[in-house]
Length: 447
Image (cartoon, rainbow, N blue to C red; front, side, top):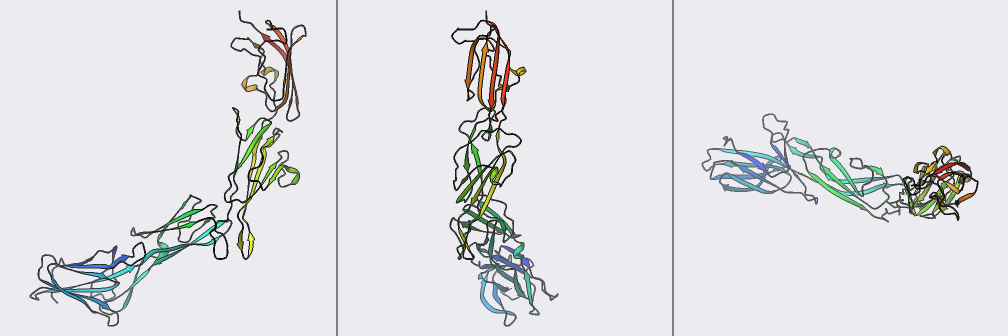
């Protein structure tokens, strides 16, 4: 055989190309053209092109490798063409093309192997689903190796492809839950709501295949074991009106709050509202109140101010009934929020913090507590004011914190003249503590 054009070559429209590792040292290695199956799982046929630049009237003879004879003796076609010849619809195996010119003054041969690499995500299934975890199993259609043959000895050789477990697996979920390990068959925190899982599988050469699994309410395996069985307890508290310097879960007594359930996949609820005196949870005498099988309990009013700890609140929930080993079961979850509700201690300002002067119509128009010394968690309040002769000229009582100060007006005597007045304050806190304050206040009149 005479050597032909040094620029002659065989090429292919493959996804990637690798090389043989022949055991016969006297022959050069040939290309292995690798075609991946399409995203639907169908094999992609190859196209080989033999090219001899700047040559005309060439004869191309195409052959395919025959494993029974260990030779390239299966004739495919012969054609005469200028510079190149194309062999289409090539399936997996070895190929040879000989090229000669019109005068047979030279000829050459090219060899190549085609590997149709099946690469597809066949399916994703729920392998196991418990109250705590979910396990998925991914079925892959993937060829880890390809057999070819030494052109001289006929020895069967193996081309090793990237291992299936070495592929890159990337998971996403909608809605987003906990982290899912980047492995073929992940195990992760069990979902509590309908979820779409999306898998992206990539090899080292940038080829990617995708698949998704949708899990809906009521989906189960053949034994009636629900996939969405896990349950998550969650709740919050709110108030219709939140005064300044208070929050939804803290304020002065009486503190009226409404609890809101935000649990996921729950079908049964049980609320526990604990006393805060000794924090003996789980004991009957530590309960302030409980509510069984109500998703939203009635509004609760906390009247006893904190002593040492806040009030604990717990919510226990159960999920939908599912079958396991022929028996009915339910998943369970419990959320305890420690010191969740905080009621301000009963408080009346010390005498030294009570204003001792005011000027009706002036900068300080009323005798009243300042913002930082306002009474807190007071059940009843009473104030009496006397003139210098001991005559009571003003009094006020309330049990709702409505007193907004004395403006200098008296009971039946009109505006009090400038002077010094004596006051007494008696208040009872929601903790049953009695507060007594008395002192003098200066009333000034603008001239």
